[in-house]
Image (cartoon, rainbow over all chains, first blue to last red; front, side, top):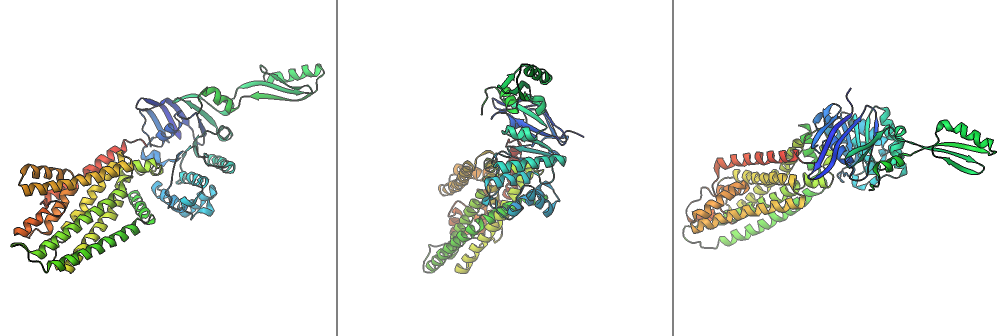
Amino acid sequence: MSAALAVSGLVKRYGAVEALGGVDLEVGDSELVGLLGPNGAGKSTLVKIACGLVRATTGHAEVCGARAGSREARAALGYLAELFRFPGWMTADELLELHQRLAGSRGGERERGELLELVGLQEARRRPVEAMSKGMQQRLGIAHALVGSPRLLLLDEPTSALDPVGRRTVRTLLEELQRRGVSVLLNSHLLSEIELVCDRVVILLGGRVVSAGTPAELARPRGVEIETDAGKRMYPEAGREDIPRLIAELVRDGKNVYGARLLTSTLEDVYVEAVGGEGS
Amino acid sequence: MTAIWTIAGYGLREALRRKVFVVVCFLTIAFLGLYWLGARYAFHHVAGVVPPEGVDARTFAGAFLFGMAMFGTLFLGVVLAIFLTLGTVRGDAERALLQPLVVRPIGRSALLVARFLGAAAVCVPYVLILYFAAMLLTGLEGSWWPDRIVTPGLELAGGVLIVASLSLLGSVFLSSIANGIAIFMLFGSGLVAGLLGNIGHVLNSPGLTHAAKIAAWAIPFEALYQDALRSITEKTSGLTGFLLRLGPFGGAEQGGAALRLWAVAYIVLVGAVAVAGFARRDL
């Protein structure tokens, strides 16, 4: 079976500005890939090319084996833009019904009910969009992206307007989607969120992939920390295999050892290292 | 096809919920009320007027008033068409309303066709209702009826559809405000072309008349309007006919079948350019 999203040598130029400079990326079946990078790194452009809103200058992008932007590709994906708006006069139910028709979904009322329940909006079914909070609209956006049971979900900052509880709901939802076999490309600034839910992480900088791998692969050892009665001691050059020897030496020297911890870099450390001083 | 009807229906529902129809109905009733009042007083006054030799006062008053109502109908139809379509692409994209629709497997051309059909479904009945209502008021008050009943109304509706298609095309490239201004200015230019034709006729200037004709065909809603004005008095001859051909708001010029074919082809051409432009546009 073809990858949910396969991108190779993707270049996008807006006049003299190069938004993407030859990106290679793959999102496999049921895989949850996090896309990281500072503002202007090309994350949204990449997602927009994948869903056919923007045309690539050169390179290839395929969604479930179909050319990105083609009818087949669009039928296989769900998309939530970073900035989106729904008509304020529509109710949540009407909006989902409209997108069911456009997506060719035969799910009917049952699908709409399930989706609203999934994002915790079952009580707001008849409420117009304009009477919803930003967080509710964001959750409705996620529900609308799931209409028609897409194989690939492209989420561009899906939790930007959510409170911590809303974010946790989305995390749970992403895990549930993964169990159902949906592939997800998650573009987010929230490193902790990416670290918690993503199988793989791709870091973009200046339109190029500067780092990619599983969170475990990206994490680098940063030494060992041992807590004794004299306080915490750092052994920056030590690794996991050095811990028994270090403890034995400390005990021999008459120290009481309370704990030892292998230190690895967090995703935040990896990210900061990868993007250097490129802040947003 | 299902997607086209879904989007067209979405546009109509939006107009309904946004109270567009309520506002339009209210203002249209006000327009017709004023027109009826004007027609009543005009015909009452005309009954006591001794016209110059060769002029049929009742025909002149009826055709003049109805020509004015036709201009009003065209203007209101154009306003409706422009406001229903001016933000279809770039305006909705800037407000982030378009992207969720475009990523669905419906095709960008289907979206444009649907929005055009949605606008047509509102504007064409509106123009026809207004046209026939004005005709009825004129006939009842002055016992004057146009020489052609249906064709002029259809031509006015066609003119409004041309403006709707131009507005859709403009929405692909221009922001809502710029597009609205551009299309209203284009509409004004068409009217000026008609007035130029009037002046050309009066001065017997072939150059001016020719220029007006070219301009009217380049933006054929004006040519359709002129043909519609011509149709309502096509059997009226003599001095009355001559004066009426000058028209109250632009000259009356015969367009005929060639014009109607050109108008259809024009809409198709404008639509094709809009579809091609939209297909290449990054959102």
